[in-house]
Amino acid sequence: MDFETLTVHREGAVLFASIDAPPMNLLGPELVRDLVSFISEAEADNTVRVIVFRSADPDFFIPHVDVGRIKAYRDEAAKLTGEASIAVLFRYLSESRLVSIAQVEGRVRGAGSEFILACDMCFAARETAIFAQMEPAFGVVPGGGGAQHLVRLMGRARALEVMLSADDYPADLAERYGWINRALPADALAEFVNSLAHRIGRFPGAGQVAVKRRVNSIALAPIEDFRRDSDLFGEGVREPAVQKRIQAAITAGFQTRDAEIDLARLLGELIND
Image (cartoon, rainbow, N blue to C red):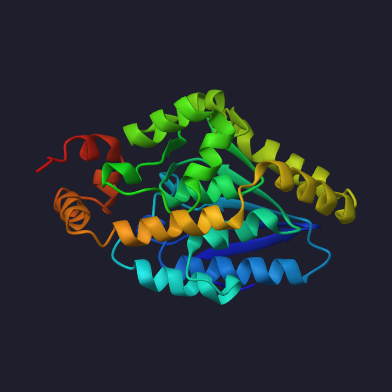
């Protein structure tokens, strides 16, 4: 497997994919294209049971979408699902026969949060992982399935807190809220994920598929709800008021590494007209 934004290596039934999309792992067309290819190739190999996503960037896992290339990354998503929607792409991952695990050590916001929520499990470094679902700071609904997952995982009140605050949540609090499986010490995270992935990979694939189907039938929102959120996001980002806030954020440093280290502060200081 040879990709522009992913470095992949295999250990038995487990594939490890490290996200490496400088300058900060934004979800743009290149990364979406590689995720589509990676998932397709992994599914086509019946000896692969588990896929683990990591980041080569210690500060950022996936911070959010590249707001300047929304149509382009949506078009790449359509190559796997037939629909120009990352919500549908991420839901495809949730329904895949593959067991997907996110190993997070940096910032996960917006579509990055929605990506790790689409994975079957997520484990994060207590000291460095940060989570946010910050689209409402711009006046739009999360478009990649965030609302669908967060309400089911956290309950109504906490999901509203997370989305309406558009704030950063450290790994310990994300664990307490049910956003992720566990927060672990950074120096123990990789060993834990490796051990779990290999343990799952040794078990029969048919059983994993059957369990995922039953769990998804209980906990995964219908695809129509993901499509609706995707449409609402697409419509919302075209609104003049939303575009004005996006441009104000870009002027303040949005989508640059230095500013996004403390993105919650930047978003909180945007002025309402």
